[in-house]
Image 1 (cartoon, one colour):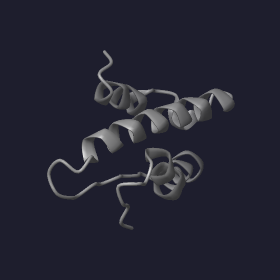
Image 2 (cartoon, one colour):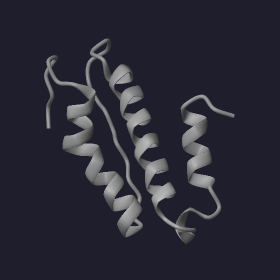
Image 3 (cartoon, helix red, strand yellow):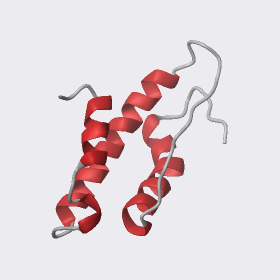
Length: 87
């Protein structure tokens, strides 16, 4: 899918990334979002917004599950938090 300059981060998240998050949380799959394009076209800006939305939805999912075994050690969430600049 190619998105133009009028596309929003939320639109891209809804169209592409939310299905990946659903697969990760509900089917135990791994997921990757990869961007490619010309320099200075907004990839970093868009991915920062997508990472925030992914974090929001992952934490909401974890909170909605009672002691879900797949999230018990927190390693994946720790790695994600480090990508966002956490400790």
